[in-house]
Image (cartoon, rainbow, N blue to C red):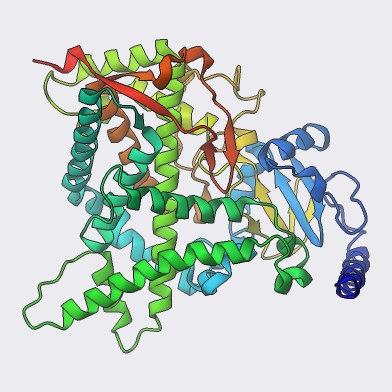
Length: 502
């Protein structure tokens, strides 16, 4: 064992020296400033277990456009709205590439992943397919009744808990609601019941993928190590993806069998649209492409929405004055006894401010999925070489004290005077969904679900923390994956709101 460790160490040193020698050929070019890298490892030890916070602290010293050497990977970190605009708008095409994480190479997921594909014709076709089938305004209007039904089921589950005096795991309930919304859109069926073991297991699998992909991975920074998987990240990721892919295989096989029946009627859901592509003789779209796309949709679509709902509810319970204001607004603008509808959102500016403030304080993806420079780019007098990894620290930008007063405080009122600032990628001080051509395609659906689900939970119920904890003493710590989850899940007891009766 010692011999193999020694050989591996020698190979690693030689490989790293090759990288340093290669870097000397571009040393005449002015890279953005950054910390002096240590031999071989570079600045890897600076990342810690919360890279978003570590990189924000480094940016205070080295500036909003900063270079780090992470193993053999040259990385430029963007930490200001101005620099984010340069990367995601001015030079959008040049930075449209992706760094492919080793954790998503399992089962060849990355080869057909809308998230990790380069800006190729394959990527554009997948985006177009998803937009046309799910995310266009017309499709979203057509699926409004489905969202309304899923929220009704959520409220029924919460009402049952209220009657029993039982706490609700807010994140889990929101996750299952979003999961079933997506599964009905894709498969025309629910895949889990609220509060079921199946829903909990599915959430654990999705978080497992995100957690493993969010960890600093030696295999990403030293490609020579990939066959050895020294941290076991690829091995664990393969298990999680395998569980998802098995479910997708079963759904595909069942649907193909149904479609072969002479008496079958089309479901007209996303799976039918994907199988139409699959069975088109002129198409290169295969079964593996379907599974990769479904993996992207379920992983990105369920966790980010449910995590944001959990954070919004936690912040409102933690800040009772804000809770009272949003509930008062709902009472004044939604007729008594009438459930909240998506069209009510335009008359609920404080609710919208709560959603924006939650996305600002707790961006779903604190470090946007890594971009890669397709060509060499000049930015503000600095050179970003081709193939450089580019990290946009949305968490740092959205807590920048030069933009936001009291940036670490939950204060929705700040958006009442800044109503022009939205989260749709046009204002670079607030980019929880990214911006430019790699902006999250599911944003329009996510925003509708966030407003509807949050408003419904607040209209029908009052809330108190399980165990009688004082709201001001709540644990508001987070934990880092690709997404930023609440470290201690929010468990709150619902109380039937007097204002909703009658």
